[in-house]
Length: 114
Length: 110
Image (cartoon, rainbow over all chains, first blue to last red; front, side, top):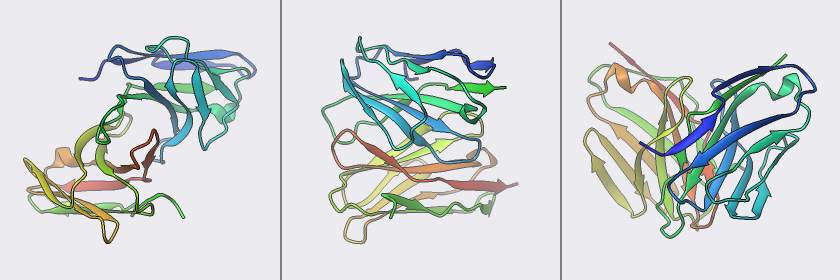
């Protein structure tokens, strides 16, 4: 079982609120990722990080920001939540070194913005 | 053109049959290929990876890779109702990016 954690697991919040979704991993992986996935739909990469102080935007601009101050921690922040942000958010991590290293996924945060 | 293409399905097979899931990719420099299973409402979990041409078997699962045709497949033998899920194909070129397909929904009918 992968040691990657996400909190909260479920969140219902009103429009305009600022929220931070937490993701932590204890595997020492330098690569971390945030995905957005609607039910039955494909994964969309929002942000990724290759290591401390390194972050990049993915294909989907979700008006969110990330930070990577510590290897194990990769939080995602929505400055002003909107109903269009309602979705499942998945965090993943991956070790460097071998091309066949897999991505490990956290359990996800299901976000509902009213 | 997307990096990774999969038929979205749904694919239905009777219990005990072989389920065949297919995936094509566009970058000839792709090096590793992964199959993930995702149950409804859950996170993806790795089933297998393959990086050499040919077949790789793990229990009831066989991954097949043909780099010349840029094609990777997953065969599930003796399909069980518990195999009903969405199967995601993923590809990496060796860098930091993973490219996921849209997934194929599989239903195994008892």
